[in-house]
Amino acid sequence: MIVVGDYKDKQVAVYGLGRTGISVIRSLVEGGASVVAWDDGEQSRNDAADFGALIMHPSGWNWMSLELLVLSPGVPLHHPEPHEIVRMAREAKVEIVGDIELFARVLNQSDCDTNVIVITGTNGKSTTTALTSHLLKCAGRSVQMGGNIGRPVLDLDPPENGLTYVLELSSYQIDLTQNLKVDTAILLNITPDHLERHGGMDGYIAAKKTVFNYLKPNGRAIIGVDTAPS
Image 1 (tube, one colour):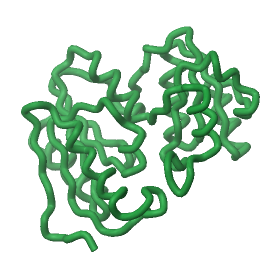
Image 2 (cartoon, rainbow, N blue to C red; image 1 turned 120 degrees about the horizontal axis):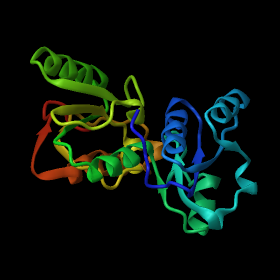
Image 3 (tube, one colour; image 1 turned 180 degrees about the horizontal axis):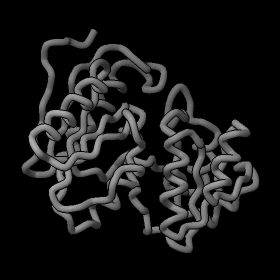
């Protein structure tokens, strides 16, 4: 597990308590944060409480005391309209991030020499991510694979010298990430998908292209060119 320690003795909210949300809670609580959380599902709320979160509907949150809102990628951030929780956070001027952004902040503070590969695209990204991870392991590299495939990113092993993270990112995760720094960014293809969440094809393309903003100065961009947008 990757422990997020930046919010020790501070209050952080988590909205959406699937596997990713639970991993966020575990990481933040281990790092000393006070976590308030909510999900519409009763079982999800029970699971979050088991890991140390205070379960409370957002209408009861003390928004002025919150340092951060960690949002599930499945919750609309912009389109077709911002979710109510997003509007509440923006009104209170509370920063909204996802779990990939928390991972990025931990990595940016680490002195370890790690390598980060991100893979996105409409089709084939899970297969490409799994194959990339497999090939690197066969080559003798220490590899952790996750993100939108397999394990949530904060459930991966913490940074250490020589470790390579191979991450599949969805457009929803990209929208919630600002400070990730990667060595290789791979965009496989773009065809119409999830357009309602991005306001149309232009917004969807813009979200996918954002992975290249993450590149380190000497980073590598790999772009699939055999599938034209349609």
